[in-house]
Length: 237
Image (tube, rainbow, N blue to C red; front, top):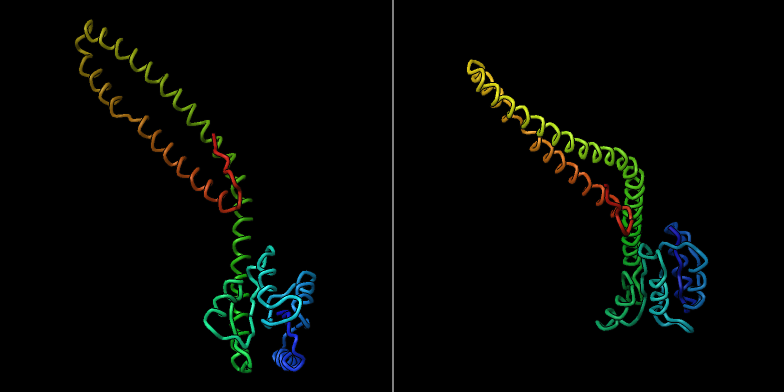
């Protein structure tokens, strides 16, 4: 992981450099907050270690600048300071610091904080990558589903029209059956049985269930489109 370290005190800076080198970090060193801010904008750093009290731009100001940038949620900011009062801690955290180490710092404590910072950065970036992958997947799936969904919706509309035509034909059939049964009483029982079978057919109910399923799938597509970062999901018609 790349580390940006800002420290104006030469002795403290030398100690920090030695530790970072021993622990295998790739690092860059700035002698004040202003220089660190310039370096941050020009590089890609996952961890920032900064002293609080520095000339030109202090550590709190540096962290605020970093947090005001886009895509810096997964940059771990560690603030070093001899100021250890509660209000100092609150001020540093409010500025966007992830952790606080009091000076003079303990070597083992600093190592533990950096390890925690590595874990947080990796976890954050993995979650971000998973989200981007999910968004890409949704962007690829939704358009492919939309076309057959549109065709299904059109088919359901055609089915409603056909069912209406069948219902009209059945009504005419029943009217004819009534006339035939009056003229031929011997076929009345058979016609009555056929009418009962027709009454048992519930195409409307089956169609309504299909429409409900279609609406559920539409809701899923809208959710996928929303998860994919689209502001307005396109309804299927």
